[in-house]
Length: 377
Ligand code: UD1
Ligand code: UDP
Image (tube, rainbow, N blue to C red; front, side, top):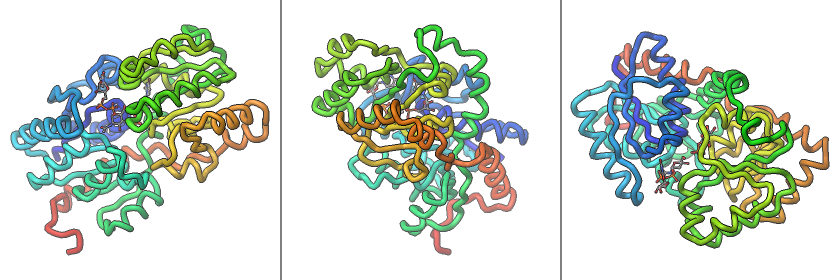
């Protein structure tokens, strides 16, 4: 069997590594195609190194651009590789432009697409990611929703066949790396932070960073924190802060440490030891509940509602007062803190990668890994 794995951004590298490893354990070396949507050392190569993902077969160097430019460029380059390599299946994960490009290029060559982390919906079609999720799910032949709730989202859209709930591969990644992070990372010492005495924040979503008004709200939230705060900053956010003339203001915030994006081991260590995590990232919402750290999400919706229902995550939007109210409550109310920290992990047992590889291999052996004319035949 010859599976191709298409990825291009930080979270895709992290979440697909467990799938790649599972194939390798079965003696199958997947074809690795990196679109280069993320290209800075600390957004890409550091993860390839730390996760020991060697042997990328194709670096497509797509880089940044407008939505259409980036997606279109990636499609053109992925198509060329797939035509030459003729894999049996193209595996994509998540909701980035790389994912949509991989899925469209592949299905039109009649190479079936397997979508890892299928069925997530924020029900907000103004997000580029929501469009990518919907279109990728509908172009895919095999769907791996992480939870029953994600499976139900697919059912509502008429996708009921070749759907397998596997858990999320982020659990695999956390379990495989958190002990290594604990042992190897010196990030707390480096930043002079004490365990459970700081807030960890990440924010990079287009809806939070692309308008000055929203980015200013984020800055006001940062200015209000009563605890030391560390912010490993995505280049998108840094660029927008500078462009909107807000960067100098951020630099002056007392108790705020802004770093470059961090490698996975340092970031996991910071997550595990944080008092509170605040984020607009999908993966970080998931990791918070896996690592038993209360999460406040700087968005008005989430495609990870399981975290909110389980009690480990609260949507605070970009509302300073609401955010501060929760921060203070988490600091002062021990019972509430315990309750949020102990919310059960809804994302499975850390064996998602193995399940995904086994299902695809079985389908291949049974001759079922094909683009069917209709889902309903
Ligand atoms: C993308 C995904 C988003 C995901 C995020 C993971 C889409 C539509 N969005 O957002 O869902 O949460 O990746 O981090 O695919 N840049 C650099 N260096 C890099 C990469 C990006 O400087 O290595 C800067 C560029 O200015 C670029 C901007 O960040 O224009 C945005 O990058 P892009 O890949 O378009 O989207 P992300 O915000 O990273
Ligand atoms: N992450 C990291 N270093 C950082 C910030 C995030 O290693 O400085 C990891 C984080 O642990 C998670 C993933 O990157 O696994 C999330 O990626 P991101 O927030 O960029 O994307 P999203 O999940 O929102 O798509």
